[in-house]
Each structure stands twice: as structure tokens, then as C-alpha cells.
Length: 99
Image (cartoon, rainbow, N blue to C red; front, side, top):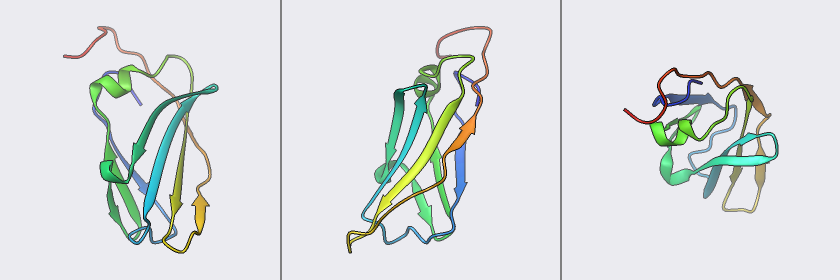
């Protein structure tokens, strides 16, 4: 993921989350939660979750630290699940700030 860009993240899931009452996607670097997206921020389909990040959000990530990403969901019956943790690198930009 490159800082200062507006990426669209598409997560393939093996559980149908269309009936979930809460979904959180957490982005963390080292011990700090940098960004957390909620169900209102995403498009949910039976096998995918799609969400977009803003320039401001990606500028919050620090280089050269990796980002850890995890999806958690809760269903109306109280069942809660969590995905494996995804790791990705943060890449720098030459000109800082939003454009």
C-alpha cells in the first residue's frame, strides 16, 4: 500500500458476511491501531468485502513499517469470528500531503 493514495481493498472471505450485524476491519502498525473501518464503510457480498481508503487515511501509515489487517464480524446469534491477520508493506511517496 502506498501512502497518499486512495486504494480499494478487496478481501476474499470464506464465510458469508451479508447477515453480519457488525464488521470491523482494523489496520495496525506495531502496537497502534491506525485505522478501523466499520460495516457502514464497506460493500459486503457473500464472498468479498470491498472498501476504499482516502488519501488522509493512507497518509496516517508510517514508512517503513508493515501494516497488519484483520477482519472481525459478529452475527445476530452472538457468534463472533476473526480472520487470519494479513501483513502488507507501506510504501513511501516523494511529495508528502494530499493532492
